[in-house]
Image (cartoon, rainbow, N blue to C red; front, top):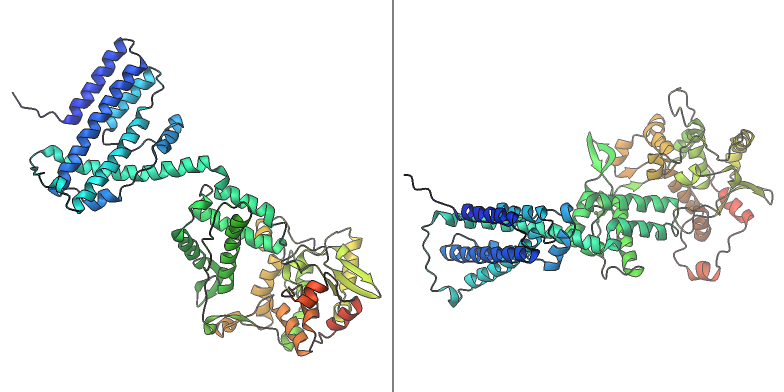
Length: 517
């Protein structure tokens, strides 16, 4: 007759299922079930603790690995299993046995949750094994008389125990995080972002709101909706920064797609920093800003600087005519006027795209563009800009009349306002892309050669051209900032004392006319 070795797990499993069968024949109450379950858990706790002690003495278990295990508050485990069937089951070295208890509890409709109780037992087991590991490392006298022998094949169970407890550590982290999220709904990243946008977007213009929106979407895509804002740490900051540094810009250099420029990276970091600063100052959810002091710098020689357009280039731009039927097919009017308007007003791309017919006005014998109701990039974006005589000579007011007769309300109705691209990059992005990718090449500007020389040339160069010309003509810096919608840098004289008082229209008209190209 063969001698079959009965494994402890097999024996216990058989005992549990046998008792479950016996209990099914009688109407034992819930307290009896609880007593039997607790007895089983205490027995397994003692068994695994002694097994761990023995394996530590034999050197089978690594004390450092045991010390790296972690516990969580028992109430967290209870809250986790309060979710019922939706709760993730924890890893267990006695899975089959606990499953038997769970089956019985379900069959008899008992309120006891065996998995929750075993999870608390394993949590305590980890704490006790960590203490033993610490004693082992410190050569505690308590372990001197332990002289076990590795003569039992079942001691390999200890390896399985360590694997299960390591998996339990990861489970406990997830359970703790999920319970924390449930208990702190107001601290979820998605909720905080929504509250921030409601508050902040009232203070910034459309362009600023779009930039914040891009940054916050990236933050959510990296860390998820349920990340608690109180949990952000140094590792998260590094992950966020590295993600930004790897975002593709769409530009290519020698066939290699380039990443974002320094200014774009800094803007992402700045917007995120403002979000966390808001969390400190308004709802007071956090005490310190995880992004404080985080930035990026490049040496001067590596920075690309945007240049102005030269006189010959300006002439080619303002006289450019689209000849191909396919070129700028859906944005013909915008393609014709955008660059001309920018060169004679200094307006930004999306400011031009947002113009309505009501913004074109006449007063004191002067035609002008009224941006006083414009919710733009900064608090200084609202302003008035007299119309340059060259802009009028080229037929701009005639175009405005045509749009009014056509019953339009917007100056450039062909530009989409609600498309995904428009929402992300602004309504003028389609014109900007055409100008940068097509028109510049057709007037002889080699963007790649410019980049190789450390220079940027794009639609925004028109604004740089205006500023450069004003500087050359010796125009007062305050008036330049007023026309361009720039901040007055907290100037006490012009900012604090003058309030919102602006320069009269006739003076601004003379300044605009100094753009003599």
